Amino acid sequence: MRYIINFLMVLLIVSIITGCGSSSSSTPVIPTSIPTAIPTTSPTSIPTAIPTTSPTSIPTATVITPEGGTFTVAAGSPQEGSVTFQNNSVTRDVTCTGGIVNLVPSLPLEVQMASSVYSFSISDTTAYNVAFPAYVTLPVTLSSSILPENVTVFHSSNGVDWDNIGGTLNSTRDRISTNIPSFSYFVATILLTGPSGKKIFFLHHSVGNDLVERGNVRETINTYNSSHGTSWQFWDHGYNGDGLRDASGNYTGTNYNIPGDNTEPEGLAYLFTSSDGDAVSSRNQIMTYDVIVFKSCFTASQALVDDDTLNSYKNYYLQMRNFFDLHPEKVFIVISPPPAHPGETDSTTASRARQFANWLKSSEYLSGHSNVVCFDLFDQFADNSNVLKAFYRYNYVDSHPNELADQTVGPIFAQFLMDAVNH
Image (cartoon, rainbow, N blue to C red):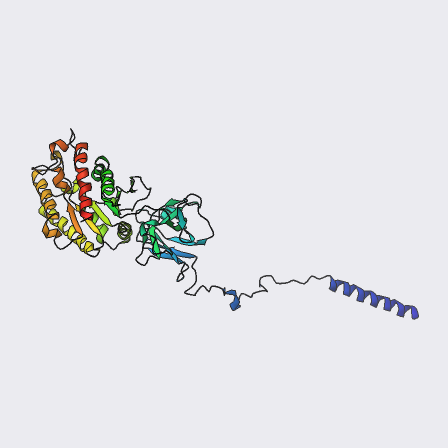
């Protein structure tokens, strides 16, 4: 009996030991789908440093449509910078991103940073339409001694190579804006050793270019400065592809993106009076000069095929004069369109071209508008038949005046500018 009891107790002990071993071999499973640090249902999952709904937050991305839009960095702060897209600046929806970056640009020695470096980009660069450029606006802090023409924007596509892309200060001198050639890095700058003196700006195409170059316009103005103790600078702008030349006659590598490259009367009226973004951007840059000179080409004279066109021309220039009246601090010099070669016009059209030139210099147009004057280039180049003078023509049919014409009229034009601005 004692042996049976002992045998049963051994079986009981083995059973207990076996059961404990099975229990200890199972591995507990810890759920991983629910985070333990910050539950997904917790209100602390929303960032608290810069709430996404806060009006003072710094946006990191904005969707821009072909209808336009604005992307802003550091909104409401002294470092606020932005990119403004006009209609058709992009051909399809893109996302604009950007911010202030910790980058020291490689600028020329005479150039000083006037803002932080800003980086702006779009998700699809092939959608950017440079024909309707967006423009960047950066903050600047300037002393009263800094001239507006010495404040500009530098741009880099890679953060290494930097180019001057110009810019226009606002009236309060705390923001500068300029067209965007491509998206990347931008910084506002100050030219520390810029040339002094008031500046003349001449907008033209091929006839004006020949007049400036072959007519020694810059040289004549420089001679005048030397003999009269003045310091006028003559800058000029041809086709957008040629762009802006400085007071020394050197191409700056920049242009003001004249809308449509159009300097015909309707194009000039659009440039000076339109509220569209492309006109405003170009006009703002031109309006940094003290004296603004502009002309249409002989094609404007050739287009005067009826009286309706003549009246349209007059209306365009009256619209422009209304704008000029708003800026008595500037001098505006309108230039009558040059005549055409007799082989590229007819007598009636040529007569209307003379009528328009006479009207531009008449008291009907100029009286009571002391900051508007007219240089009659038509009369300088035209004969009594209202076509290009015979000795100013090439030996083939071409309405461009020849070298003799430019050498003769160029100094007259330069002296007229000096008389007008120093009157």
